[in-house]
Amino acid sequence: MDLVSCIDRVLKGEREYFNGIVKHFQGPVYNTVYRMIGDKEEAKDLTQDVFLKVYKNLAAYDRQVKLSTWIYKIATNTCIDFLRKKREMLMDEVQQEGIDAKTIVFASTSKDTSPELALENKELKTLLHGQIGKLPENYKAVVVLKYVNDLTFEEIAQALDQPVNTIKTRLYRAREMLRDSLREIIVEERRDCGWTARK
Amino acid sequence: MDCQEIRIKIHELLDNPQGVEEMERRRVLTHSHSCPDCAALWKDLQRIEMGFLEMEVLEPPCDYSQIDWDELAKAELGSDPFAFDYTAPKFSTWFLMSLGSLVILALSLWAVITVPHWWGLIRDVAALEFPGWLEFTQILTQMMLYVKEISMGIVLISSFWQGALYFVLNNFAAVTGAALASLSILVYLLKNKNPVAA
Image (cartoon, rainbow over all chains, first blue to last red; front, side):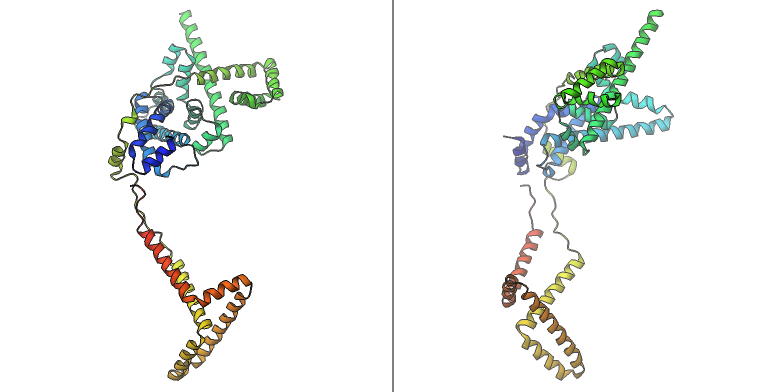
């Protein structure tokens, strides 16, 4: 049975058919959320939130849109909201405690793979994961939808409610931002190595 | 091509290598041979692209399909997520007034065209009982005649409309009755529509 038929069944009262949809999408959705958030524990809870939103809004699903695109749209929006709320919360704390905002935001977005850990690992994919976490939310969403969910530019545009050209521009900028940050890490690593050797 | 154009072409090449023409591809490569910055960019972006494609795919930490989503949604919403209260559309006052005026106008028209003697009878009785109204009834009669003339003019515009209008006018009571009954049924159905979910 195809997934859209599952939706019809759920809407007719056979609620257990929703589990088929969940089973099919839980891997991609978890990976999307994890790449967006950068923290496994938070990704676990947020994935549940995403599927709960999907379930509650099932009656509003527009058949013109691909089911996967619709689900990833909910997933990315949930992550963007989560990150914004988290940032606002942290900014409030910063204002209260008078700590440097950049330090806090940086620490919060790289909980799993801090730059230090990434430098120890040296593997590009680990470095990349850490750096993707530091991209602005809108850029991160494009990168995740393209490389984790394998969506086309048109599908990403549909999921993020943006024109295709905006999506392309964001991807280009995201790549170059990643390149710059990776280069910085490598330069720092070399400098540190040189400093240790001289010492 | 300058470096900025080459940058864009490099990204296009990464996104869709087949979508970039062979000549453009050669230009990028030729330029990259002579420009160390673009050559470095091309190499770095290729590495990043490879890194993206080789990103680890994680297994979900639990089987989300074992969750009772219906219970969870009900607990959060406090009601069935697929049940919703349907309220019949509210018509605005101006719409109801316009509809009422149209019905009254149509009834008047029907009365003037099909049973003119009724109006004559009312007018004569009114003139006898209230002599002061005579002038008023004359004006009203004149207005009704104008309305009749206009409606007859409309009737004669085309043979199709003529037939249709004659049918409506000759069967006015039946048509009005059917229209009102249909409207009542529609309003009743809209007000008593059941929720979508079983």
